[in-house]
Image (cartoon, rainbow, N blue to C red; front, side):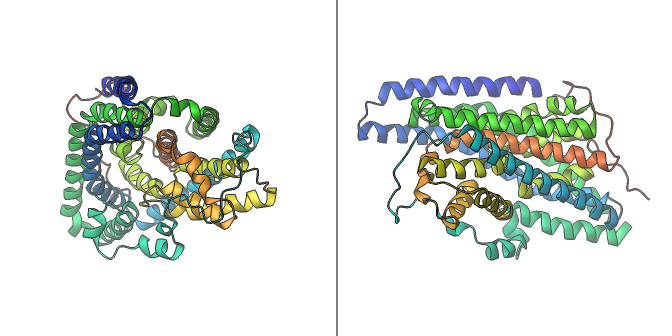
Amino acid sequence: MAKRLTYFILAGLVLGIVVGWIINSAIDDGTPEAAARLLVIGGYITILSQIFLHLIKMIIAPLVFATLVAGIAHMGDTAALGRVGAKALGWFVCASLFSLTLGLILVNFFQPGSALGLPLPPVDAASGVDRSAFDFSKFVLHIFPDSMVAAMAGNEILQIVVFSLFVGVAITAVGEKAAPLVKAVEALAAVMLQVTNYVMRFAPVAVFAAVTATIAERGPTILATYGYFMATFYTALALLWLCLIGICFLIVGRRTRLLVRYIRDPVVLAFSTASSEAAFPRTLEALDRFGVPPRIASFVLPLGYSFNLDGSMIYMTFATIFIAQAYAIPLSLGQEIAMLLTLMVTSKGIAGVPRASLVIIAATLAQFRLPEAGLLLIIAIDHFLDMGRSATNVVGNAVAAAVVARWEGQLDPPDPVDIEPPHAPSHRPAPPAET
């Protein structure tokens, strides 16, 4: 079923480009009236993709809570939890630094913005992106929920993770008295994965609608207007994929090629919908099929969604330096390194922030006295760039979970490739706690 679903999603992607192109060609005559009509049409078409994303978000909170609590409960003790957490965070920091550095090196090598030679905009020119969405003090306070109900309702993954950590550790401390609760959260996880299976059948329609609306509103020429920038950025993403998978191969071994096959479906979904969240349930299932124990996957993956967004990392250095190049503003090596370290810290607060990468870039531009209005250069194609970085986030988090499981020496035998129950996920039960 997963293989057929991937083909249907790809078909929806291609068909969306064709239909969007036809709609744009038939209506767009260069007048404001035509542009307004295309926006209206695109808004109606987007309803289908928005329904799908709403259904996915409906699943995220209970799934993260149930799988994370069950995973911690099956760790057996807090020492194991701390050990896995330390290894995961160590990987996240190294992967983030690597992604940021790779983006910095490649954008200086390709120089995608140098040919633009734009004049500096007025000092008071703004990008329209609200930088107040990110504030370090607010971010620190935002980590800790004042209401679990509000955190679940708002899909605040980081807050759900914090609450789930407390609940999981408490269950471990209570012991046998909490056994019924452990069974309940395991049952909830199984139910939510089954719901995911139902929702995913709507994915090809959602992908078709999202791509059709984008091409219809903006036209196919937008792909060529910023062709070189997009080409160099996707080249950078491809190199990052090769590096991450190569490092995984060195640590995990030859079975890494199975991981690549198993995550094909969630990667295509994340790319098509430009949403890492949409791929979360499928990524969890793919890791389970690969052999990552549920207690590790359900702990590492939600943390990765807050601290290990490799695609967003490489995009932020790439886009920031691109803007400096477009306005011919020279930056010293020291300034670029300082920018990298700044992005390394501030990017850890992007989970839950609307248009997160753009918000962090806007804040960084202001800090280094670069024209914030330069964001207007990339906002027009941000959706197409977001497709690539969302898929990269899925790859990075899948690799992180596999590596941590290997470091723990707890990789289970993988499920056979291309064999999956037609109506239920293959989520295997967590093994009993180690004594």
